[in-house]
Amino acid sequence: GAVVSQHPSRVICKSGTSVKIECRSLDFQATTMFWYRQFPKQSLMLMATSNEGSKATYEQGVEKDKFLINHASLTLSTLTVTSAHPEDSSFYICSALQGRGHRYYGYTFGSGTRLTVV
Amino acid sequence: AQKITQTQPGMFVQEKEAVTLDCTYDTSDPSYGLFWYKQPSSGEMIFLIYQGSYDQQNATEGRYSLNFQKARKSANLVISASQLGDSAMYFCAMREGQESSASKIIFGSGTRLSIRP
Image (cartoon, rainbow over all chains, first blue to last red; front, side, top):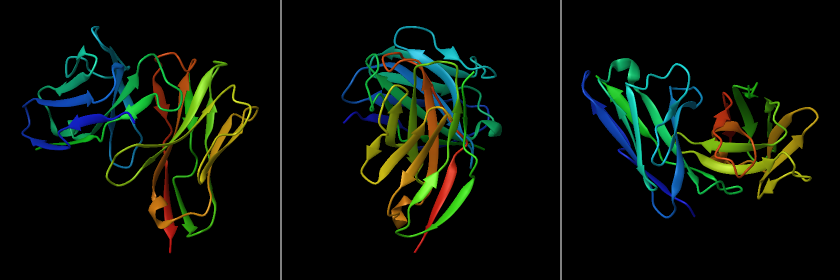
């Protein structure tokens, strides 16, 4: 089945530094990637949608200059949290859409990244 | 705007009993898809079951079945013969538009299911 590899699984960084999270589709081409963040005991909130080769579309209230998304290839999308602050500490998870949509198995999630900013 | 509502923040169920997790949705799009995901403490999102808005029959996947009541806009998840390993967070989610569209999916607030031995 489709697999999305997300790295790192955990990262601790100092306040003011930047952190890059990678999501790589291993056996399929991900034309669209969705990035979510999840605070403890809360739901997944969509941050942005990225399509290969084009600029990401951010949800209302998400700072595009702070959360940089790059989807340069059909198998790799990255989320960079710039100038991270403690309030950015959260669980970040990506979801890749295979092709133009596939019944049942269209959305494949990465395993998530737990970011802690100290 | 699309909306997913899960009204049960937490549930406790005795092992081997069946459990129903509630989900209601709201959308004006005639084409949509409904998903259920399981999220254990490790954080990964495990796909359980899918129901398309035009599907005539309720979806089933092993011990999971989706009670789809279109007129009521509800898509409850039924887990039969619950197991200790079913203890996790469960999310209902929806995609607006046809299956071939690259639409985002949004999630409900989730239900934490705990199975008692």
